[in-house]
Image (cartoon, rainbow, N blue to C red; front, side, top):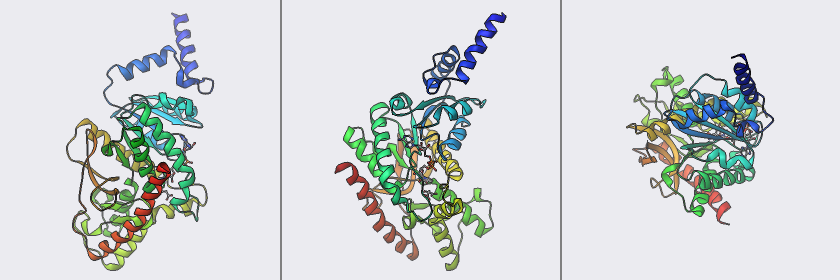
Length: 356
Ligand SMILES: NC(=O)C1=CN([C@@H]2O[C@H](COP(=O)(O)OP(=O)(O)OC[C@H]3O[C@@H](n4cnc5c(N)ncnc54)[C@H](O)[C@@H]3O)[C@@H](O)[C@H]2O)C=CC1
Ligand SMILES: O=C([O-])CC(=O)C(=O)O
């Protein structure tokens, strides 16, 4: 009896203090039991986070481990994923957590996944635009999407890495090249713009932000972020001064955080919250829930541009319906023209990166 207990403890300890990347391939009985639980019908979806050890990745991993719709959570990064995995795996929630470190383990990290969330890449420092991140992040997104095309081509992809206005077109081109592109399954995450808009508008209206719904369309950088304040729910009117203050604050919310963090990064905690809110909506859509609607930067025919953020209905195959913009006022129409001009260039830059 005592011997058996000791064996069990030894096995568990082996899982807790593995040598480096050994967590990942651990074939101990404990892991096998967890694997059985993961395979054996624990209801829920399999989710991978790529860039899971980063500023967004870590709180995102924690929140996804708390999501009852998740049965298996794969945490992949090129550094530190064993530590993050060991830490998160102690949470007494249902999802089975597994860690994966470095390119050789990307395939295992992705195989069988229903949803892949990508916050991998470098963040801004004060004085930079999101486009300044293109040089490094374009290559990272390309490599990760090649992995998705190979290992889980039917997965829904939530792309967070900036500049989203270019990384989503990059992902689309990679998937096209691989012959697996399904526009419905590729979603650029613009949820943080909606989260901020709800918060700032609620402040002005004196409401609880949970009661407020602001559609934010266009893209995810500066003037391409276009809040439609004429469509706020509950229906509200704003003075011109309020409209200008709110539009500017929503468009520059990311920069506000970058400057406050003074060189140590960009939004991570509010982004993790927004990413989970969006991922949860995608999972509810996958489950077949009706009327799951959120804003996202997707393949679109709403404007002449090939990608555009609007409200989309999330279903079993991703963004099943892309909603029109609805009626815009004069201020929003001018904003839309500005947004489209910048967006067209960012989209083209992403497409050329793969096509060239
Ligand atoms: N869509 C949005 O609304 C937002 C997007 N972002 C973007 O998210 C990205 C990540 O931001 P943070 O987490 O703050 O950065 P971070 O630097 O804290 O974390 C990034 C993580 O990505 C990992 N990584 C780098 N190359 C990788 C690769 N090839 N494969 C897998 N992982 C890799 C790094 O090791 C690191 O752990 C940035 O590009 C940032 O601009 C940030 C906030 C909001
Ligand atoms: O501003 C940044 O660089 C990060 C980001 O996309 C955001 O916070 O909206």
